[in-house]
Image (cartoon, rainbow, N blue to C red):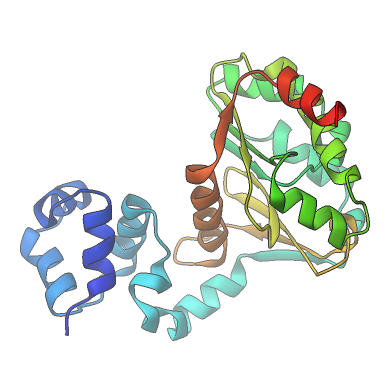
Length: 256
């Protein structure tokens, strides 16, 4: 039986089997067997393939979800569990910026507490040192923010919290390596990623983010929880709208 999910993921990236093989450093016949005979690659090749194609490992190879080693390694990615975002130590939030060397990814609706606790100019410092910064905020004029505001009892207050976050981040947007986009997607978890560390603030209906649990995760090769969240981040990022000038957005919301 052929692996149509893998075939489709390769086609979606406009790649050929030979091109995939070249990028992964394997024989084209090996990749052909992955597709046509549904062979499951070794962990190192699965990881490289999912990174190349931007899809989740379990989507391509569902049986790997039950592999005992995968389950064990994935459990090892959990460093700590916090019953609410407000119980996460302030030092941990600050370390996400201070200790980052390669990348910082943030996916929230407003996430106002984050720039309030961390000087946004530190993001510019990290970017100048070669760290990639990707900020994803909810579109304050979008339907997702409006719906979440109603669900949490904040109404239009959530949209205004987004504009406050935009004001905090505005001074660093001109720094090369810093990019901000607005999304209009349903948010099941807020994501705060710094290199191999990831905090996932999972959401419950009707409860503000600060009251919801946080998973402190550390990426372990072969684990899939961190990669699962990073795949989600990349999907939202791909469909979000780049922002370079926040003034017009803030003015439009405040002028309602």
